[in-house]
Image 1: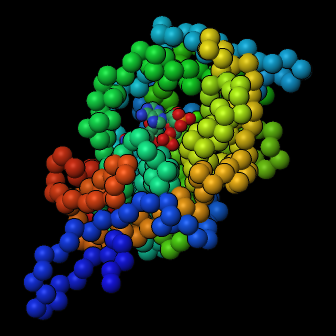
Image 2 (image 1 turned 180 degrees about the horizontal axis):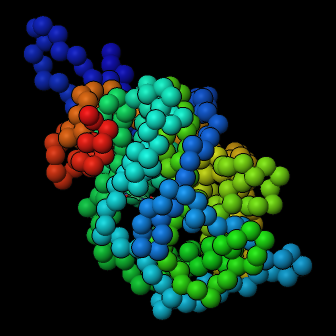
Length: 379
Ligand code: 0WD
Ligand code: CA
């Protein structure tokens, strides 16, 4: 009997066509104890500037600077500056793993390669891709596609925009565009460019700018190297050591009824938990906006306590299911992508209600490891 995701080995006399391997995503299959997850440690960082140019330093890191707690509630107008002081990133540009690969290249011969074999056994990806894997058993709306290639042992995973996601992006309603701006505007009200000073919300919101942390962890027997965008660091926390000093900022609709809170815990808190648990970001600060687009209340959620809000809710999410599914997917990918070839791509596809399926491709358009990376690392 085969396990899910295991590839059938052809035996002499076995002339049956090999069934296409697939991986089920039903949450019931992934309950069980929480798997091992190594405490994430920061290996380094990089910044992207207003022109989306890479810099191997922390110049884009901002400092958490909440409004004074003198009994007054905040009154942040999230629509201020829209659209005249908004410079959105060009989403037609598919960056794939490029910035992360540039960081990797710059750190060859450093600590993480003290044993070239560590990277050779690792999975390299964006944090956001792992977040999508964690939430898959509970996702009912959006599918995903992940391209995978093996190169010098390392398994690289890079998201591919699904045709449906592309249509949604190109037909994004004006109100949704403004809502996206409002999330970034909240960051501007809560962060300063230097520690100890107040935020300046008078400038432009430019979503090209990003500070990214590069982290090392391990899920079960899968060593991980991934990078994630970090909103800010809290200079007040006793241990200023990353990632424990990092703060994730979020906005959400103001809630009034217990039913609205319950739905928030079931759906939004799952995504917030998955995104911040992976890099070990301990706190998520939420700004709740009213229908006029003003944030009038703030609430800090501790990442490690988020599950408590749904622990007694039978129909809600469970961190063990998320992590066990992710581990199963990583094993499935490791067992599928056997050949070491940067031009060979396995495309893992998933739509809600179905299993993860896989197809094989060579070269354009799916090959994603750029020649400048492959050539620099070969030799
Ligand atoms: O090429 C791709 N397919 C992707 C590239 C998919 C996802 C992200 N990225 C880029 C992002 O632009 C970012 O610079 O990779 C970098 C880091 O990504 P991540 O941290 O792994 O991504 P994720 O956890 O999904 O998002 C973190 C933050 C978001 O915060 P919220 O609070 O909204 O979850 O990164 C920002 C956003 O602030 N972000 C983006 N910014 C500009 N364009 C984008 C985007 N497409 N996606 C996420
Ligand atoms: Ca954020």
